[in-house]
Amino acid sequence: MRIFQFWKKNKKARKAIDLDTAIPAAIIKVGGLVDQREQFTIEAKNSAAMLGEEALPLFPRYFFGTELQKPESLAGKYEDLGDWLHIQQDAIFEIIYYYREKAIPMLYEVAFGVYDWTQYKAVRILTRLAREGLQTDQIVDDIISHVDDFRYEAQMPTFYFLSGLTGNKKVASLLQRHFLENLEYDPIDAFDIFEHLYRCSPDVAMGHADFLKAVARGEGLEGRSPLLDGAIGTTDENDKQEYHWPDDEPVEEHHQLRAAIFYYQLNPQDEEVNRLLDQWEVSHPEEKVRSCIRKLRAEEQEES
Image 1: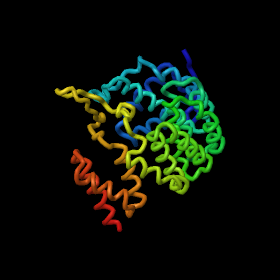
Image 2: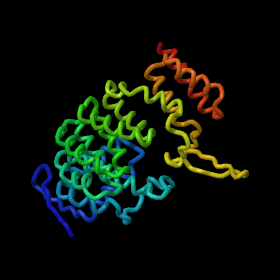
Image 3: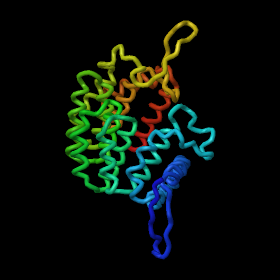
Image 4: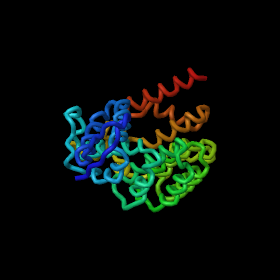
């Protein structure tokens, strides 16, 4: 059993904390506040202060801890496989964040170690610290030096987290390189990276903006299965294959619409994109899509 002592502020009394009990209790308490973001962050900060630095190397043992039961505050929620585990991990990393620069060595071990689900979550905290000016250059350099070796499942979220370092030339260069590399074999991965590149460095991204028009036309998407993008496939009574997203958003021409809308927001006067939007606004089979386009154009007219 690991016990450590710390002084209260008045230094007249000692209080012993059993980390075997205190750490899981803190994780459960923070996790139970996941739907109350302000309280979630406050409790995570308080937990880091209460547990002390001695807890830092012990957190990884709870990344996949099945003994941490979901709190009553979340009863009836997050019932799908892995939901509570992800919340549990997010609670741990939120607590770790409040150790600030003292947490960086431990975060490096997770981010750059053997792949598991927590790798990209450690990267998320590292980039969050970097955005706040803590060892920014070193963190960016180290992530860039490792990210090419990441698995896809960790690499793509890492690109997004890095893109929050807006204006960072090293990040923009990395994202541009991966955007161009992905153009050769998967335009949708390239599209996702383009969005991150635009977030980080709009000027650099705009040099490739015609790519959006190519996707809007459907170039490179011929025969692409929606299953590649996480759609759910079902078969109707006539054995016809149908697809939909988990949130029931329409799948048909999904990426073309994404690209056209993105480009329209950059250049609402473009004739080709407006012709495509005209067509979808009138004839797309999904009313959600038609109304979305009408709303987009109405908002643009109001702004102009």
